[in-house]
Image (cartoon, rainbow, N blue to C red):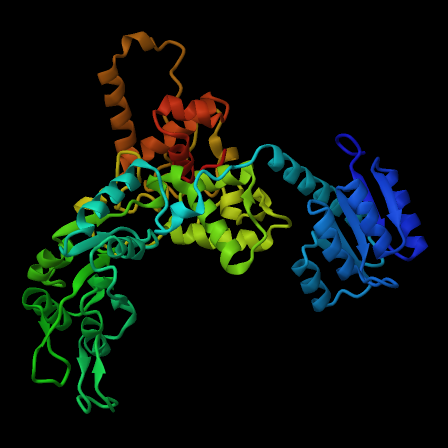
Length: 542
């Protein structure tokens, strides 16, 4: 029997036996069932009754199932349509999903599968209905998105301020931040607000061009200067004269090329590969990197003089996890662009899905978010992205998060030092917990943990034992408690003591609050989003 007030089911088929059989099965489970023996009649019923679920035969006399489906989408968009077919071909599956079917089922039917699919379709309809009542409402108009940079959070407001300060001048700008944060968008924004906006803007990805070709790409070459140079070619510096040149991933540039870049900045002149004369150029340079250039300078991998030439003004783009309040606005922007550029019908995100998206830590930053929105928009059944349309690592609390970028072995530069509520760059964000947790006197947390990490000590690691009945807790002051804690853990854990304590404290606070993450985060003094991130890092499941 249905959980609440009888959902409406419509069956469209020109086979009377199918109509009778499905009507009988679904009615016996408490569903209200209507039937139609043709596509035309089914469309009329769908428009009048707006059913939760529609079972639609693919091959009928007159209007076919796929044709009927397209019409139904226009008169009852939220109805979940299940296509029925006797031929489970690849073409049928592709066409059914292309035109917005919820699913398709092959005749003859398995009753259990019919009922299971019906329940899922009804739930999807309810999710959409709930979304209609409680949905995310866009806060910006399309005009607010012209720059492509979206965000009202404090970190992004600081970025906008600096852009405004540097745009009017010709100073060289260094844009830093993790991969996927939108460094080229910042460069284009500076260009658009500068007095060079009428001139050209060119972007070069230094990491994507082989070392033996990067000089030709930037400075051009003369005919015959090397094998394959069959004609003279102008480089980006010449082509960008009077405009702005953006060099992305400049930390990947070879040292010889760095020398030529330095001369171009200092003297305002270049020399083509194979050429003998110098050419005057007037180019504003904006560079970007996700590497620690300070460390590279110390290691002799990047020229110190070029570093100071490039680093006149620095703009650090925050990672998306540092500005999670901007996620709804970013999603709104992405959906608007998908609708405009690709004709996507998806315009909204359900409240549950939005919460999942806001809570996720986004190791791939805005680029990862954009990929998720594009994927989810394709999978969405109607005009709304539901939680079920999201990838597993975002949809399911406690699921394994997406792989984070591996550390390059270098420390973060000063502008990328983690805050008090971020994982540091020493690998703790992805390292395994140092010890499997075992309780001596209290229930173990294993029922809530996923794949506890191996111990770092040879002896079985223990948590704080429950005090004996005769122990006077009031007689132990804070210093004594800390001494006991340190000695106990130090005897069994060789390193990562803070990591060990943090994990154990989170387990105990969650157990104390019965798994209530809102209460637990308040006790721990961190945000709920940070707590969820810590739960993932320590491989806990609550």
